[in-house]
Every structure is written in C-alpha cells, then in structure tokens.
Image 1: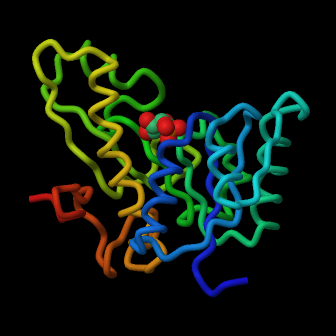
Image 2 (image 1 turned 90 degrees about the vertical axis):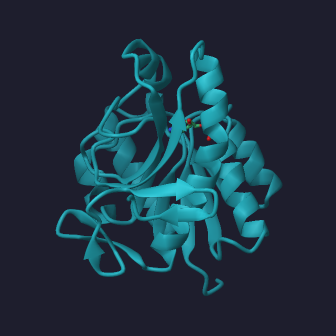
Length: 222
Ligand code: GRF
C-alpha cells in the first residue's frame, strides 16, 4: 500500500467527474491513490473508466437488499475494507442512510450542480431557469444525513445567459465541476480542510462563506 491518501469514489453515471479526478492525479495536482470505484449501476460509465485506470471496482445492486439501510451498511463495510480514508460522491444518485454514514462524516464530499442551499435534489438546471435566476453554479459540500444539506465548502459560479436552456447550462457548468471537485479533494487530503463542530474549517478557521473557484483556483469569497 502506498503512503498516499486513499480515496474511494461512488458514481452512478457517466463518470466525467471521476475522469477529472483521475486527470488531476495524472497531472500531479492530486497526490492520492484511488482504491475503489463503486456504483449501484452495472452500466455506469464510471466503472469502465476505473477499470481502464486499473482501479478496483464494486457494483452493488440495491434490488438485492431488503432496504436502504441494509444496502448502505454493506456498501460502507466494503468501502472500509478497501482501505479508503476518504469518500467522494461523484454523481452517486442515492440518498445515504444516516447510521451507515455516521463514521464517515467529515471524510465524505459530494458535488452537486447548484448553488446550495438552492435546489437540493434533482433537475437543478431546470429549476434555476424556471426561477429566473441570473446565476447558477455547482457546490462541493460535506455529506451528512440531510440530502445535499451538509456544510458547503466551495462553489463555482456560472452566469445564466438569455436564451439558455437546461442542456446548455449543464454543458457550461460541467467543466467548472471538473475543476472544483479535484481542488476541494486536494484541500481535504492535505488536511487543510477539516470537519469540526458540524462545520467546514479551512486552515483551522470555520468557513464563513463557501470558497469560490476562479481562473486560478479556490479563493475565499469576497
Ligand atoms: C454532475 O453534474 C454532478 O454535479 C452530479 O451528477 C453529475 C454527475 O456527472 N452530482 P458525471 O457522472 O460525473 O459525468
């Protein structure tokens, strides 16, 4: 086992955020070892990406479990067994059981395509458009039992242009997500970012507002 921080990733879909993490590692910007990529969908593109990168994969089908709790307890037992120290949710489309994730709180982050606390849950691009927002974005937050409700660590902002539709917004947001997630994971594994007293702390101080992604990286919000 290498001495690098060990990361597990869960993803249900195509895996472009996983690809961004792998690319950041390859460029030397994310000194971690990926020990597991897990999914609840055998068809997830993320699994193919992981296999191509030589990362162990895991598929658990929720239909084989009596309830959510049983699924999540097995999932987390396997993540634990992989040796992972941190867990990244990169498009994992399931609500997690509070008891199963309790031992991991402070070590799990999720990327969500909205400026949380706005638009938890699904269809975030559509909801931002329907609300007439002039700004949209993505957030990375610590995961707690509350859906998309844990402390927000960092956000990438995206102006909404006149005439934008859901697809255009999603397409313009994705490249920002791909910079945001590796940048936050790096802060976490460097232990600059920590979970303390139910809050996100950076360099020992509670974050008063989420960090912002700009052209050069993450900055404190002005
Ligand atoms: C991303 O938009 C992410 O913010 C959301 O799910 C999507 C996953 O996309 N949680 P991908 O599978 O990483 O391409």
